[in-house]
Amino acid sequence: MAQQYDVKSFHNTVSGVAVDYKTRLKGVVISPSTSVTYNISFCDNIYVSGTYDVPGSTVCTVTSANHGLSNGNRIYMDFTSGTAQDEAYNVSNVTQNTFTVTVTSATTSGNVNLYPFILAEFDCSSGTSYYTLIPGEGILSDNGIYVGIPSASVTTTIFYG
Image (cartoon, rainbow, N blue to C red; front, side, top):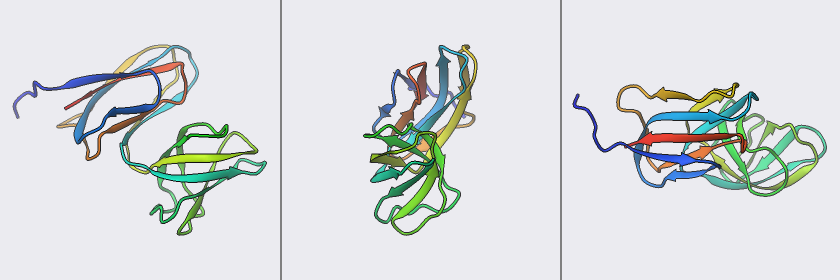
């Protein structure tokens, strides 16, 4: 296989779309500024919208018509209102239009964007940056790459092409 010369990079300081077209994730640099453990998600840039409610416990009920999820799926949730924490969650108690996840915050509700196709997840737990090379041709993302960063204490650079 010949070396690829058209690899590009994108630096994220907050969650958001890094690439908005079909591409392959080739590698990532994770740069935490603290020694707190964080989970960073790299998702296919396609989402479904929904609403959520946490009525005073840590059980978050999400409503999204025909979401297509199954028990045990792992998804990235971008809470666009309310006080729930953006991060990857394990799905349970699935019905056609609802499911639950366990969150850390209580008594909140609002809107959420659900990214059901996580390409890769990386953890960081020290203040040291690190690089991860994706082997082979990389991970194919049909709709671009959304980067989920749970804290302002972490930045990422992705390499794609």
